[in-house]
Image 1 (cartoon, one colour):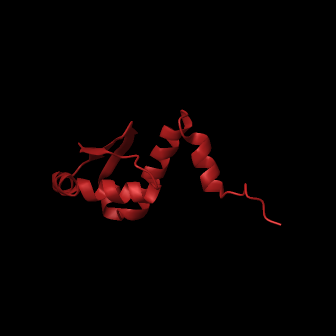
Image 2 (cartoon, helix red, strand yellow):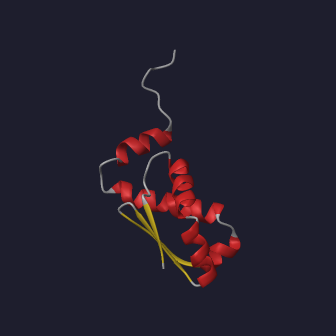
Image 3 (cartoon, rainbow, N blue to C red):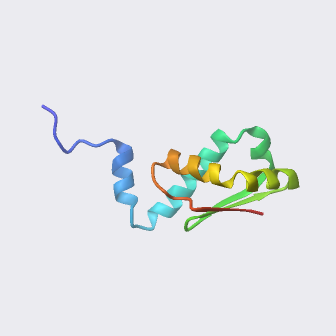
Length: 96
């Protein structure tokens, strides 16, 4: 017999971390993981730092061309990151 209170581990972690100080660090970890898995080795090599400060993703890169490309595609990146996270975590991206 299945219980009505069964939830996936991911759901339980989300519920526990919402509204607590755990969420920002966990969300930053998930964003960094997405970046590594999705952006490819060339972009990862040129990305020096990646921070999530409240709802702003700060991306530090070496290449001016990459900086320009990321700035052009900010809205698509925000959409894809939030879709991956399953909630609106990133509202803005600053490329430096």
